[in-house]
Amino acid sequence: MKKIIIAGGTSGIGLATAKLFADKGAAVIVTGRSEEKLATARATAPGVTAIQLDSNNEAALKDFFEKTGEIHHLILTLSSSKGGGPFASMNLTDLRAGFDGKFWPHLQTIQSALPWITKNGSITIITAASSTARLTGTAGLAAINGALETMVPILAKELKPLRINAVSPGVIDTEWWDFLNKEEKNAAFENYSQAIAVGRIGNPQDVSNLIETIVNNSYINGAVLNINGGLV
Image (tube, one colour):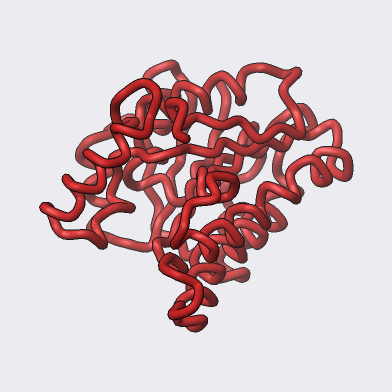
């Protein structure tokens, strides 16, 4: 039985991915900081184990992986909405918080997990289309996600035969957008839908299906795969 860890997998894309793998017989553990989200994950995905863990806590990460033992695949869906907005007025403290919420936790989690991932296993990082979309107001988000994506092909070489890949989603209807109120969110989604070739906003299942393909395909390595519906 495959053992899969999904860091930050208590909601959105992470939880959808956890449910998908659990339904197909994998032993899945999701981690997260919010006890509320952990409780929701336990209630909506009974086949998934949900454990409270702060991926900013290096000691807690090492202890978690030591107790978990050998794993086959690591998927990182850690996220932060900090760092957006026009550059000229951007609060750089918020941008630092964005890196603290996504970039550094990814690196710490990967380093802590490395001794425990089987040599034919994989690491899949979830970034975001902001890295390449070149949209105004996303310079900070592009910096965070672009930094992770730039590392992917290098890590694939350094850590071989372990496979390292990234999935870069476009506009996906998840809790990430909850910094907007309902009216603002609906308006944003309507505008984006008009710019997306498939004519709709993505859903977490769209992304989880691609993650499953990457995890199961042993010849995908060092790649950043876009899933944005044709967003221009």
